[in-house]
Length: 129
Image 1 (cartoon, rainbow, N blue to C red):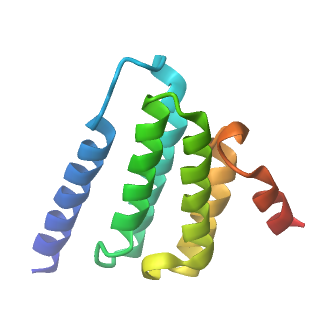
Image 2: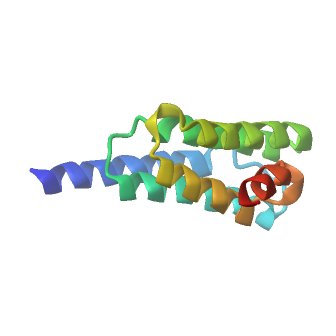
């Protein structure tokens, strides 16, 4: 029974990730311009699998990153900055019941992969000091 539930959960996550990654793929950007965002989405999905809990905490974070992708594809740098910082606020506030450990890992990972022009780097530096 547990194996069946795990397979179902993994299938759902794969479908969700494919939907997010393939939605709105427009030729507006160069090929590698959104690699950092794909990596961030994968990190969120990996935390979901690692946590093994229901998908409640996954949906709002993936939805926020989908909004980031939409702005990125449209070349709206200021909107990417705002929505990415909202993503970081969600992590800091532990919205939707995300564990503190998962939120911290994602927050720190965000600093590593997100180009500085798309997020408030001082949030990370303040936290590290």
